[in-house]
Amino acid sequence: MQTKKLAVSGAAALTGLALVALPAHANGDKSVTVTVMGTSDIHSNALNWDYFKDAAYSDKQGNTIGLAQVSSLVNKVRAERGADHTLLFDSGDTIQGTPLAYYYAKVEPITETGRTHPMAKAMNAIGYDAVTLGNHEFNYGLPLLATWIKQMRAPVLGANAVQAKSGLPAYEPFVIKTMKVKGDKPIKVGVLGLTNPGVAIWDKANVEGKLRFTDLVESARKWVPVIRGLGADVVVVTAHAGDSGMSSYGTDLPVENASALVAEQVPGIDAVLFGHAHNEVAQRFVTNKVTGQQVLLTEPGKWGQRLSRLDFTLTKQRGKWVVTGKTSATLNTNTVTEDPKIVSLLKPQHDTTIGYVNKVVAKSAEELSAAESPYKDTPILDYIQQVQTETVKAALPDNTLPVLSIAAPFSRTAVFPAGDVRVRDVAGLYVYDNTLLAIKLTGAQIKDYLEYSARYFNQLNPGDPVDVTKLTNAANTPDYNYDQLSGVSYDIDVAKPAGQRIANLTFEGAPIPAGKEFVVAINNYRQSGGGGFPHVTNAPVLYNAQVEIRQALIEYATAKGTINPADFASANWKLTRDGAPLF
Image (cartoon, helix red, strand yellow):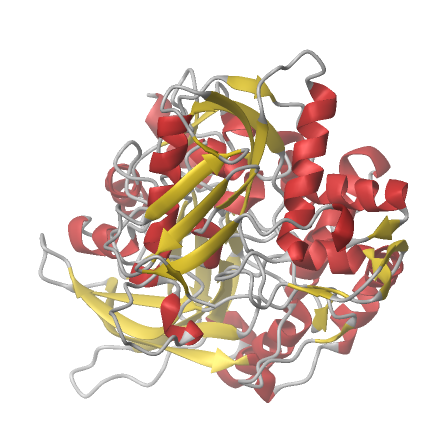
């Protein structure tokens, strides 16, 4: 009974759009084209602006970013296809990712001011028809997410985010949009939203005991028949999950990147608009193993650089609309200029954010760059280590164990310029909204941890030239999953196979006994299992005050007034080849 009730409420947002039927086929069948547009992984890029560089966004490929660019492209497609022939969906990761989102979540939170979130403002103005929850929607906690959802005119979907106790959907599972066809029965387009199970790990502090995240395939299996039963002629799944079938967190949770699995295993789906992986997939077909039918997949990249356009041909057969053709393409938003309506609408909040990121917090004694931080011990990463170590020491005055710290190179382009250091410089170094914890690890566990981290390097044979462009990111390991440890000294021998690379691991000049205990400063993403590092998820937690690391970096710099590497830089690790330093 409960499922039926929920199904009806999920379908409550039936929206009328008028469609004009195309001329009849030679056999008398009438055809109509329905166009679905899709974005994903906007990450709070509203305008074509880089807040870290304080300039219009630019990259080597000539891409543009932001919802103002998307809006102009959406307007163009609506003009070409007819606004009543089109729908606009998003596959998640909307309200986190830039200082704009951070400002209205943390500095002037919309939960306290009552102001409309800039992403709700922009999406409402553009006229989204449905938006799906991404994993980053949960970063700022459930109250902020609930406030944003209330402000959104489009339904915000997440069928597999369920209440921890009852197992009932915590968010709307799906919506059915009804398009009127002149002189004929309407066409119904159902959209099912699925989010990422990894939220349970990545935002454990925000969701534990409140929400569970069920398997994408099982959720689709449950809801697609309900959507079809309510008369949907077209079913689109919007999934915040890549299409590789792999998971970054092992097998403890349902598959992370399950979009292709959903297409393969669940009958009744016409297309999957997916995200999360930040890739551009213009058109891919997957054969459904149950029906043999082709399911269309597309992913529109990230940040509003692309818009996916899916065209469905529906033909009237025996009194029913049937999908008889489908194609997709990704459109580049650099082919249009920003929609002045969106630019004007967001200008006050954009200007406020620019003022915030340009606030001077300290002076740097010299320029500090992160360019070499993935393969060399750099002072700019040592600054993160110093702040984390000092924060933990201050919070644990009775602690007698040595305090170590873990940090990863999040951005190779981060720089603290000589002279004034601004909020944007610090935010550019620490681009994630992580919080700080401290855990207890033994010497043996630390060795395991470092071996795991050192898998990041490709093996270098004797005599091979040292090419830094080929040295890192082995097996596509991202920079943010290469952890460096401060407070101990060690070498990473890249001539050795993964798992046998850590050498000369010492503390205060002496080899570390396997049983010796340490306090280790670590971020919440890593401690909760992000990246699959060993020992950390079960290690005793000694400190967790929900201190944001980025904010701690800013406050530490403000209190000191000067960032001087002489105060904190320590070259405690290096790469070697057969014991000889690589650099």
